[in-house]
Amino acid sequence: MPRPSVREQLVDAAMECFHQRGFNGTGIQDIARTAGVPKGSVYNHFENKEALAAEVMDRYAVSRKLEMLQDEGLAPVPRLRAHFQYLAADLERFSYERGCMFGNFGTELSNQSDMMRGEVDSRLDLWTSAVTEVLDQAREAGTLTTPLTPGQLGRFLVNAWEGAVLRAKVTRNRAPLDGFFDVFDSLLA
Image 1 (cartoon, helix red, strand yellow):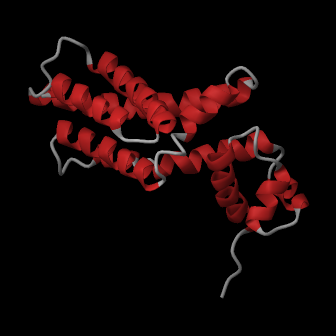
Image 2 (tube, helix red, strand yellow):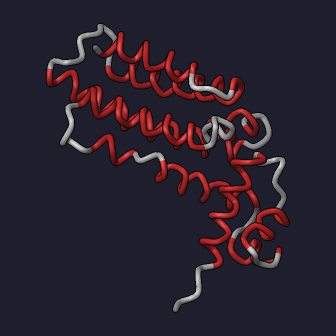
């Protein structure tokens, strides 16, 4: 049986540690211990903790299931709602304690690291573009009737989601997400 990749173990461990304790609350030794490897292994695979965090964000972005937004088996608005419902279910799985890694890193690191601020911003931009593309499809199908452009609405939805997730993390309940879905339904009904 092939041995697991140490690099993959480190990314998995870092994702877990960063999500539980944040970037600043997680040391390289914490990541190595969680991965079950010597501390030096981290530096064999990553230049520094920021480089490891950037790879973690790539992995986290995949876990957000952006490909759901491209599944034309559902009409655009139900597809977009299903995407946000998937994200809500993931938050609920962890009792709303973890929040969104993009939002967590953005609030924690935007004043500390230009590199990390840029990494978070680029991933939020990619997500916003994917949401906007679905809204463009809804406009073409005649189901998006708001006077807002798909771009304006896409930015609003991603920003509102991130705010709702932060609030759910604080309150440790679903009410902020339900508020998001109430506005989503009124804007996109």
